Structures are given as C-alpha cells and as structure tokens.
Image (cartoon, rainbow, N blue to C red; front, top):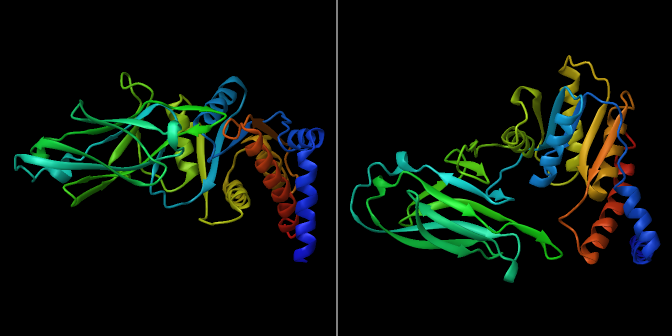
Length: 327
C-alpha cells in the first residue's frame, strides 16, 4: 500500500510538472460556477483582500445573508493582514502602578516572512512613538523602555505599516500580547481593538473571538456589511478535515433556520475551491443549487508554491471524495 502511494505521488508530481497538465488541473480545481442565490457562504480563513471581494459580491447582488464558516480555535496571535492598527487599552490593569520610574514594555510578535520581506511595526504609547521594529519569523519579544508611571498609560498602539504581497509571498504581522516589567501580561483577546487602515473615522473591532467564522464576520462588518445580515456558524475545533467540519456546522445551522433558500454561492480561494464545493454538495445532498466563487490566490504566486498547492489540493480532493462516501 505504501509503495503504491509513493508511485501515485510520483505520477501526480510528474504530471503537474508538465505545464499544460498543471494549467488544466489548476484551472479545474479553481473554477468558478455561479448560480442564482440568496445565501453567500464565506470561508472564514480567507485573507482580508478576499473578504473585501466577498463583501463587494454581497453588496452588488441580491443576497439576503452572508454565512461565515470556520472552526473554533484557541488563537494565541492576532493576525494583521493589511496595513492596520491593534490598540491595547491596559489602563484598568495598570491603575494601581503609580511609581514613577523606568519601565520595560515588550510586545510579543512575529512576521509571516523573514529577511528583507519582514513585517515592520511602530509602537506608540499614549499616541507618542516609542519604538519601531522589523519582526522576525521566529516568535519573540520586542523591548522598549518607558519612563513614567504605568497608571499613566491609556493606550499602546501597534501599527503594521509595510503590508505587501508578491512572488516573495504575503507579508503579515502577528501580535500576541504586551508585557510590562516582565510581570503584567495583557493578551490581545478582550483587551484590544483592531482598526483597519486609518485611525480617523475608525471602525473598531473588539479582538475577542473563538473561531475564524466569528472573526470573518467582524471583519466583514468593518467593511460595511450590515451586521444583521451576517451569520457566523463556527464548527468544532479539529486538526484535520476542517472544510468538512465547517460544512457540517453550516448544515446543522440550516436545520434550525427558517430561511427560505433559493440557492447558495460559496466564496473560496484558488485551488481549494473545488474541494469546498464538492463537500457542500455532498453534505446538503444536492437539495439546493450550489455555486462556487473562487478568487485568485495571491498568497501562492511563485511557480513552486503554485505547484505545491495544486498537488496538495489534488490529493486533498481525492481524500475528501473517500471520506465523504458515508454521507
């Protein structure tokens, strides 16, 4: 069995190395096929540029609801996927610290990329620039010294300011917490807000969520989508079969919903789209007309990354075809 699998992988790899075959397979996996629908499903793991495209799709067409999907998770780091701000408000936890002296302030963070493509961020205390750093791909703490009383700190602002993507990949910044004097740890969850692009006329998102479905909902709201028309359906926390788990959560929600479904379009990305489409069609037993919208995958732009992603999704769709047989 193992030998057969190795031969199969070798054949698939050789096939994908042939340019026409690779182009055909990649096109098949990432093909869009839109239907007349009043429900738009958005996969919660999508990056911000894809979520913006989903919000535009929703607002331009006659959808009644957006349903965001994604598994429950313990998300230790908050992801900044575009030039934006993460603002901590630590005053309540520092109110008794009135001693005026030199204090250490550390930000625990890391960059998606390394080397010359590292994420850069500025650190402000009470609107005053206190430091700036290029983050490493390795998770670590970034230290500044601040003189005053901790009780005088109303806000600590992290500004991610060099977002970009290209052949080198997608440049993102991830922030975990702030640490004062090596003792007071303030995690981002429930203690910070996320602000996109500009601080003027800002729409703040409280950084508290337990699933990608809920995070995607909040980000879509910040992009102007009516909150009353976005429904999050988080799936159980799992390490594998996340697409299947998300689809099951949607199906379970659908059983208790009184929404009259005219049709469903699913918003996905790149070569993953075909697997998502197949999964929902199977689980919903083709009861509804279901379409798929696959946005370009700008996170895997190099030929090597495209090849690996296409190979992985080719194997993934075969694997899903097998595990979906009992449904």
